[in-house]
Image 1 (tube, rainbow, N blue to C red):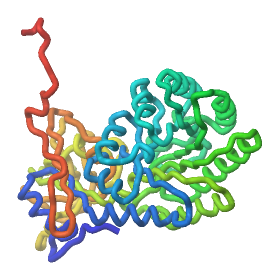
Image 2: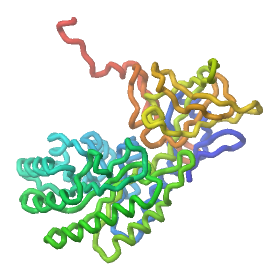
Image 3: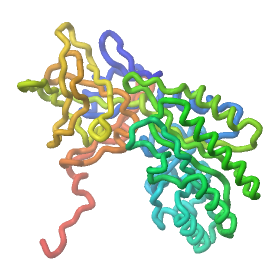
Image 4: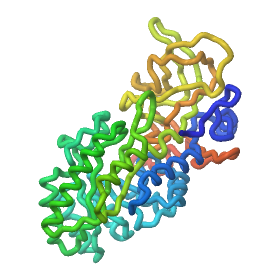
Length: 419
């Protein structure tokens, strides 16, 4: 459920027409619905009612300060994968004790930052990382709360680029190796074993992979208990998918039911790391048609947003529904590629898409763009990163200004030998 709806043939975000925002801030821009974000967080959190839990939103999906602040106010924590995301979370007012640090390649300075900040848990992905974290904890005189990320070799049935729980993936360590890693961790004086971690992938649209991963983790927890290692926290990661086209992902309530059944009779605290499921359908990319171009075999709609603004279609061949901000009156539907201005043949937002007829100057809405949209954007071809806007009721505000040309060279310098 989201609050992007048509009223009298015009697309609104909550009570604000997207055309009015475009007139105010220009195009392209991302627009997020405050009401949708709040609704999604509360629905997800409520699915685990009765369990001791902490919803740690996955910052990589969208790290806008306004979104982080909203989730913090709703009681959420943060799942981070870099020192920069830790900084963003702290700036947004998220308590260190509600932050968990995942990621396969943490640098020494990032580990030190996390330890000095006092975050809730470091999710470790190799024995070498375990040794390094222990060494840094001893050097800093700060005990390191850790979990080990277990790779249960579960196929998440998703795109191979966002699968993370198979043996061939770079993430985590297998179950047998994890058992030995925990035994090693128990001997290290500057490490506190507080949890176990698992994340099998992203945009998962079936419940079975989650159930399989849970079963594997619970068996490992029982084995650890037999060796005297008590796990207090289970971090289930994220990965629950959304509907972009015709997918039918599990409802959070069904996911919550499966988790509650697996944890029945235990005293485990639960950490969840949703990202896309909270923000994906809460955001839209609005772009303006620049030209229509008819080739020998194909029609092109050229817009002012490109792959630098929304990379997912070019990177994953991902589907995003494209629809008019104002429905045209009459005219035959057309089939076209919706493409951007980047000098790459892979610069497209949609291919061979049946759509309403459009003309130069029309506005298009690229739907379900709230996750991995702005956060994956770039300045490729020296294009300016776009504005971000949030609407609540009948109000809207720019939450990140559009970059300027001066921003493109800020921080650069010319060496003296070229002066």
